[in-house]
Length: 80
Image 1 (cartoon, rainbow, N blue to C red):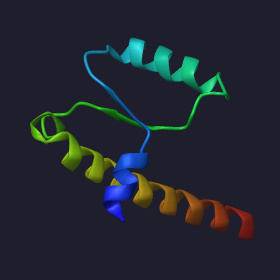
Image 2: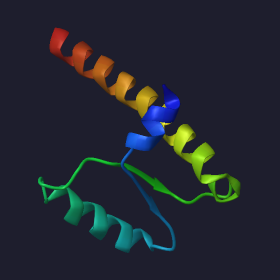
Image 3: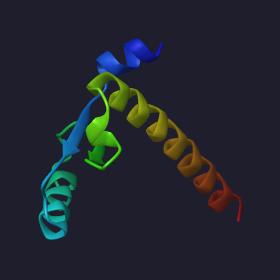
Image 4: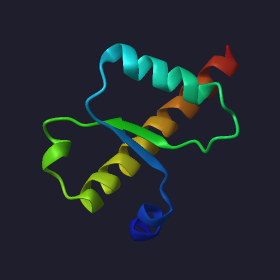
């Protein structure tokens, strides 16, 4: 399944942006609803050493965990 996920993944990996440039880019991207919703990542000391396939696998897994936590958080808010 992960191989299929990697092939279908939409990922934007950002490197060399200042914090201000990153904020500006993300703000622009969010204002354009016709764009696909990708996984955003910045290059880290760890990720720079990974093979692309391994990096994508890691990003997909992290994104799944994040989305699960977000979904649970929203459920808990709705119960209140």
